[in-house]
Length: 187
Image 1 (tube, rainbow, N blue to C red):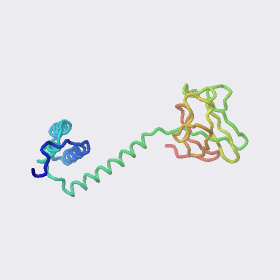
Image 2 (tube, rainbow, N blue to C red):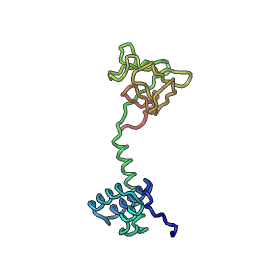
Image 3 (cartoon, rainbow, N blue to C red):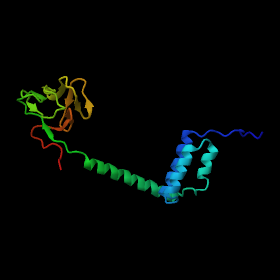
Image 4 (cartoon, rainbow, N blue to C red):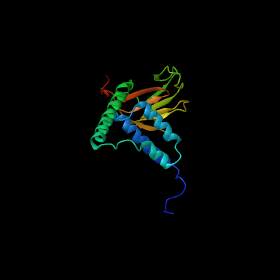
């Protein structure tokens, strides 16, 4: 024996992923048609050994440094563009202005006795309260069915709320602003 195993070595998921990345890079570089790419991806998924995986990519030319760098730059620009588009499409939330100093407590809900009434059915009749604790404002859920959130985190107890925070009651969401401040810019 020459030290090589007499049986084929089983292909790992990591090796499959590496071969799939190579195929994806080559199709992105224009070195392979989409039909060939699809056929080879199918072969990768059916391959049982390392040798079968090696046969799938043996005829492909190695990636050049220039092409690899150009592909990386295009990918980075594409990711930035996608993030900008997602931010642009994000909903613009209405403002929730904290009251001036003379009012120390606001009850939020659907009931007529609330100081801040929301007609959304995901908001409980007495959903949450916002109150002043010294110089800071706090928000607490009043046992609502759909919960109260501050900056996406569902409350399990009272939490401090500041101008610029996102506060949500059920499906209704707002940006908190201080009295007399313009708040975050709205388009």
